[in-house]
Amino acid sequence: MKQAQQKTVKRERELELLTQLVHAGERLPQLPGTPVATPVYTTTTYSYDTMAEVDRVFAGDQPGYAYSRFGNPTVSALEAAMQTLERGAGACAYGSGMAAIHASLLACDLTPGAIVLAAQDLYGTTTNLLHTVFGKLGVQTVMVDFGDVEQLEAIARQVRPRALIAETISNPLLKVCDIEACAEVAHGVGARLIIDNTFASPYLCQPLRFGADIVAHSATKYLSGHGDATGGVAVARDEETMEGLTQARNLIGGVLSVWEAHEILRGVKTLGVRLDRQCANARQLAEQLARHPRVARVYHPGLGIKGKNCQLASRMLRAPHTGALVSIELRENTKAAAYRFMDALQLCVRLTSLGDVVTCVLHPVTASHRNIPPAHRQQIGITDSLVRISVGIEDLGDIIADIEQALQAV
Ligand code: PLP
Image 1: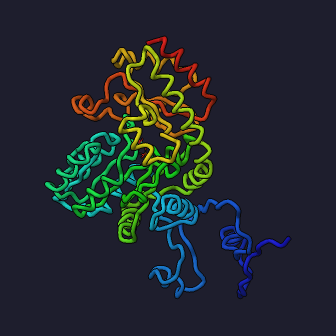
Image 2: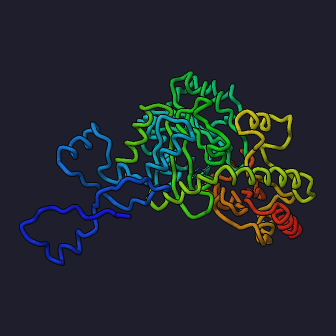
């Protein structure tokens, strides 16, 4: 089998060893044969045979890569996968989920005086981003209960927002968003709807199909799935919004590393099989915990078949799944009780993340919602003993046994 060889350029004289050290082996001609897995392109920039080609690439008249902040084949492969999975006009990857959310908000033309309607139980850092970074730029955020669509519509008509933002499944109370109704509200006042689809992933929900304009992901969670990559992706419904997402990436520069893109793309391949098992485990765990004497409340979209949340789950999420998260409030509703329970766990891991193959627990008051004022936390139902469980792919009996023994410590 013949392999690629250095292009022979006629030279006046043989290159010196020092020069060969720099150039030998690089920029070999591409031979036919498509790699089965996308290679990790660690290059920052790209060369062309002629300046005329460079000119065409920069002008956008010829497809091609110029500089890795503007595009890289490994990152593009992940973007192409996400565009397909979310059924969008295009996708843009970023260095983290927060960078993807930041770019999504920027793509909604948030100039001074603009108003954002935000779901009151958004991930705490998203709320902080809106209040601090966008607040300082003169963008006002109004927190609203997106579960009450009539009220949402009334407020939207009154304040004429430029963007609405919610999560498919809220954190940590796991309320499912009626994306269809929220999109109608947004479009009725000429606003865009951003949906953070981190908790559902495109395997459980594709928000653009329900009318959302931008889908944002923390790829750090289910998409990657193994706790070893940090990243984010935003997918746009139309070309114009896509331009906003690309501009945010190119100008602010919060690009995804090629190594993370590779890990996340690999994770995406097993998303379906992981989530099939995680969701089945979560549903059974939720049902079991609902009967536990030391547990006061269990939050899981699959519980209470006649309830609004369960019905929304069956409309928005891929049947028969209802997500892979379960939140519990202990009967002794104190932070100390939550800590005793969490400290006693031997298998389930105390982690500030979710969506990994391992079952992990998080205390929202200490971690994700730490910077939310206590009064606001209480108002939206995030109490001191609330613990969020991200259910993994382990044997269900082992997960239940560990949680039950830890509940004895409460
Ligand atoms: N969105 C949700 C729902 C999250 O839970 C998180 C992080 O936990 C983020 C966004 C932010 O993602 P990242 O940590 O990748 O920036």
